[in-house]
Length: 434
Ligand SMILES: *Cc1c(COP(=O)(O)O)cnc(C)c1O
Image (tube, rainbow, N blue to C red; front, side):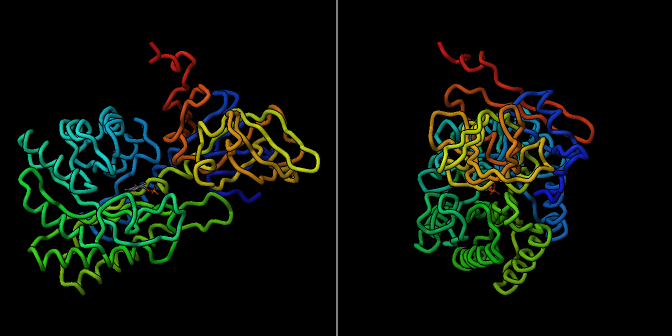
């Protein structure tokens, strides 16, 4: 049987193997719902970026892991060992990275609304760079830095006016986006001029992020053209040389067999060649290039296991298969209709002939993991159900709705399996209740 990803395979007994481990045995050992992560796949994905950047830019480039895709201590340790920097978006992510021993001089602090407390905390922790969304925030950072007696290095987040043609909810590079300051309206230039006059900050360059799930051929090329032209323009007008250009994250991954398999190393080589040619044409030195992959580092390293409950066959209408998790551990279909591949992990050699919606246990009709899934007709209560490609934006978006404890994260590394995040207990759920 052909599986979605090459870390998935089927045993001779017809059970699903993930990273070489029997998923039924893991479900038995750790219980369900259960997040599994393939450590070697995370490392391989990291190396794809690190090596592609080394080949393209030497030491004038660095990938940053966008921790919002999956943030817990172990992942920061792995990413550190693999030589990536990080992008963080909250005091919570900064704290987690610190606890994991991550050197924060290679951390870039995002968010479209950093509070004064966030700013103070990030400076105190020694976060290397802030990525600034707008003028008010710039003022707040400048004031905090002057008070602390430092010059805070930062990048300005600009909107290049690119629509990457992905989902509306995850498109962030258009002029009217809630993120960043627009180039097209002249506000980006005003912000640069303004930033260059501030004493508490050092403007090190520019950032943009056009969206997520990018498969399009030339999205980053078009983005780079606009951003590098802006960088050249700032150099000509104000004598300002940008040291860094961060082009954001967003490469797509395979959620279903319909999605293409991107060759990210090749893509980066192409974008790099395009950037070098554009810089030469514009007569500027290419700044240090940063990129912030999140999803493409961890998504295909993740798999979630559930135990099936009832199969409800509504005669003449449709079928539902209920599982023991739901939008609490994977809200992505409920949020923006994300697609997933679902398997009955113990019935991999049976013909999938039952059309059903795989639904969660939460008190919401919208609590759907995936509609219109075909599973073997024998599937039912007690079967282990696997949802693939859940390494990104599942654990990090999980909630305790309906007071459901969050599942643990178990890492698979060669023959070894170990707990990286323990299962929440009922006691954890009331730990903050007074
Ligand atoms: C979400 C985000 C990323 C990561 O996007 P992926 O699609 O997970 O690669 C990177 N940079 C910024 C600013 C983001 O908001």
